[in-house]
Image (cartoon, rainbow, N blue to C red):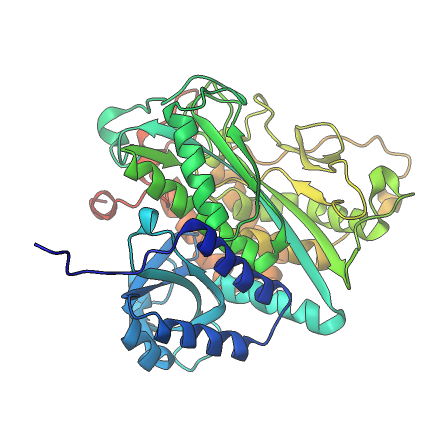
Length: 478
């Protein structure tokens, strides 16, 4: 029987061209109205496109996806609603209805061999019933901050993330952890080492190819230090698109792995005794093509603006730690061994420092915040770092004069981190008291289901109740 379906499948080279053109329009801050008009026209013209995947992210960082029929979406995009009370950390039952506003500047054509034929993807903003931005949607808040900076004096924040993960044997290895009590490595090759066609290398190749097709502008990819660990690096972009790319990176890796009968995991420390996974976040400010963090004569090539930015993040490091390390498991990675970035200091060479100043030039000078875990909400974590670096409290140089500077450390468990987060007047100012309370309550719910002392072994509960391990049935048992 003839195949009656003829859904859209775009070759990778054409996919890359399409997605890079949309990326260019976004980064050059072209008209949002023109972008929306162009996307609607393209969707209308693509007769073999069946659905558009509309994405939003909850307060903890989980990516949620709704597939809309293309014709319905184009006809009804001004009235897309969902039940916010079903999303942890969003609205209460009596105020459940929330809206989605399509952000047509953040649109992607999809590789059909990974996500299925006939689909495209677009990010959205979460709105209240009256159309105002929803306070717990940090994509909306990051976009507003970025727009505000640009309108004020054409300043743009560039971001590049180095996202590490593990590849494990079998599908849904995290969900089955409460049965197996272990993860099985797919490879024990280690840093940079794997045979050209072994399963880890095949996975990295397929994921990187799909990323390039989606316009990531990849630079390099390789096995990482720990067994079965991987990292794929891509070029910097503006903060909003950079945060979107984190969500796509993880989604894409998980789907490629599942297609191979494997599991891509972004737990910060799923296995003890080996290096954990981080999400090093590289930040810089740019205005009219000039890197504002670069100064040739500055210490480590960093301008005074750059050093002030670093200082403010270090001053509030403990306050914002919970936004960068959002799970019980994340604090295993802050163990002082295994190159853990748990020291509240900055260094050009010390990889135990929370912030590093990489070697750079006029184009590439940046700061690298190394303490971010790969399971952090990317919008919330980047918003917290950017807003803190720009407006957070600064240290008092007079207080440091004549005193021996002592090394401070980030919390080594989530309970202490929650306490500092809840007690911080700066967090109340940064996020708002309502969001401060909601986020702390979510983190406390997970923490209360796990032993306070991490110990030397990964506990079932810290995997089972992890916010990215989506097992609603197990959560409902408690």
